[in-house]
Length: 232
Image (cartoon, rainbow, N blue to C red; front, top):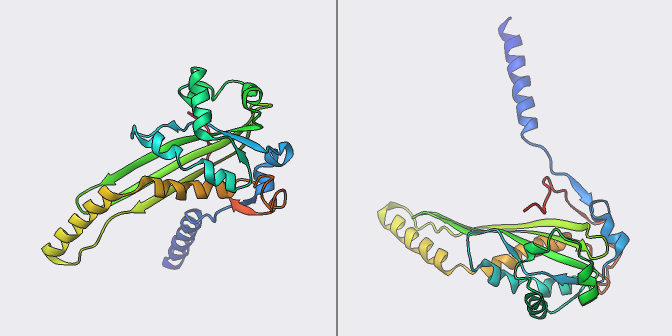
């Protein structure tokens, strides 16, 4: 094989590798991705206490304060979260995982809810070294029907924040950066970034009946998800 052929083969191989590693994101309309939301048309959502899969024991309580309002602003009637949590506790339900895989028709009987919103805190942690720090909040969310218990909508909201600070060159700069990074990490407000994560998944949700765009957003495009959510 002569040198020209070898070069052509090498270039072709590199092109194939480059193209395979640069797959363009796939977009899909809300109507295509979540047809059951438009078919069933839930009006009221019961927001369940978060399921905490993270290593932070306090994440559940902090995150619970960030969900109800943005869902309401998206056009759905939401039952007062604290009242819902108290009623569930009276029924012996202290953890949403207890009812995640059971028929949800009782929630329609007790609350009159058309659907139930489950949220799972997948990550709520900080990765910290002396000179670098990142904060990650990742939430899996889904809406399940109280009529059929089927999943009507599901999405993930993830926010990764770089808390590192570059203090400049030299030893003094490294020291300044390390101190500033430590301060940033200690002062990081998880609830602020949880609200950002909420915004990402709530934005994918078809709007509810109390929103001016109700049933008019079916052609809105969003990034097609590559994984199936909702697994414990």
